[in-house]
Image (tube, rainbow, N blue to C red; front, side):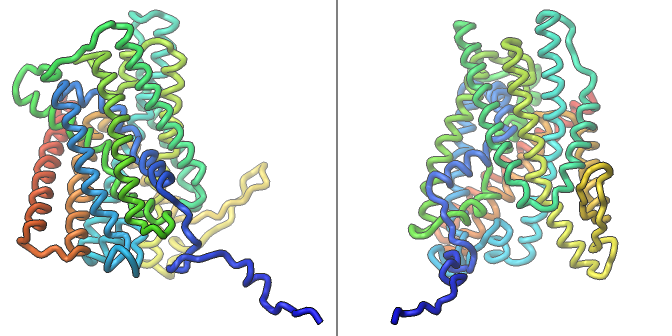
Length: 463
């Protein structure tokens, strides 16, 4: 008589699970590198040519290499904080805030949340500004192509473009949850690589056409020393906006399989990703500066150093807009989710906060579950980012402000403190003193960039 198997088919076909009960992670070194690069390269790359122009041929590349080194050190420390109380076993910290909560306690978790969500909000505001300048650039590129490069082509519709972008984001803001937006993040990643590569190609082509390398050792001359100091500070703020990726590093590390240990794979990935990103940033910024010298535009693809081929300028700016449509939601949905959780916990019996109403779209067989709290909060959020962008439509200065505000607390202070706790670094030991000195120097750099960037915003607003 044949042996009869009594094991249920469901059990036999059960998916493999990791030690935390979640589906087995499958990520490796190269998926890690790709995630870091696509997550880090964004609109900040467009301001790097202007930053190098303010700092000059020596200061610009040196500043970017220094920021790359600082980011590597920060990421190195963060990779040790994925598992607690040690880097080999036990509790996993799935997000940046989870790691802060585990290592540093509740108070500094609130500090982390404040700066992290401020970073998301500031990035969303910068995306509104950038979208308007890109749509205006498309309009001007077509005008220059038809009327000639000396034609008085200009766009007076930037505020209209901001409002249209705000309306589009209001619609996208009612995507039910972050997990349903995977396609948006993929499109955003592809678009950022495309328009950055176009920037490199156009800069190189312009250098070849010029037959000379423009620029100077000291960068753009200013009428007074203080004006030069403020410009240098703004440039550093823009570079600070472009580099940090520690806020989403642990989410990437949480996708990696083990063995080998996730931290080991992540540290290798950090080295490769930082080298590739720094090389890419140097190409964009240095080719742009070599092409335009001290006349380098604030935004490489919208400042009209380039006129032809006009269709390529249009395509690059269209790629930026597509990236920003998805990128705005990638950051904002995290704020929406946080607000939903907090309000639901604070008002558990409120129908306004917790009840959903089914709404049918007229003429279409589509129904949507509407929540009044989400309608009000998300509408107010999109309106505030759009309104702030319309009030301060200054690309380089706004990037500098938000880059400087979040650089030290998120990329330096919290990683240093968590690393000291994780590795039991004793106060006043040689290692502790070195890490605290590193933190203090970065605090001074961030404060300098913040003051200069705020001064730039004020001057633009009053000027």
